[in-house]
Length: 130
Image (cartoon, rainbow, N blue to C red; front, top):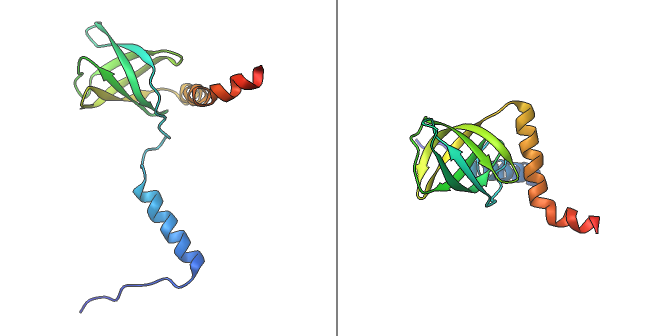
């Protein structure tokens, strides 16, 4: 016999359930990703450097566009305009580039979040200075 589908009659409970489902359906990343295009370069383990652009950055990872692909598991050092030096491990390749899991202390991640916040709000902040 089939189990009956349980319905929720209380609107507050229904709203909470819908919100929980939406939260699960949305991006499950630990950190908020910011879509920002910044130029930079990265150095591979063999110490060769290549230019790159960011597609998106969070305190936990970065998506890069680059003319060369790196191997998943490869350690790289990044120098990103307006962000600075980051270290990480390539997690996967995608069309036109690859993704990197950032290796950083809590303090470095907090500084990265502050830089990303400034980048997102700089036009508003610069207008306040005038």
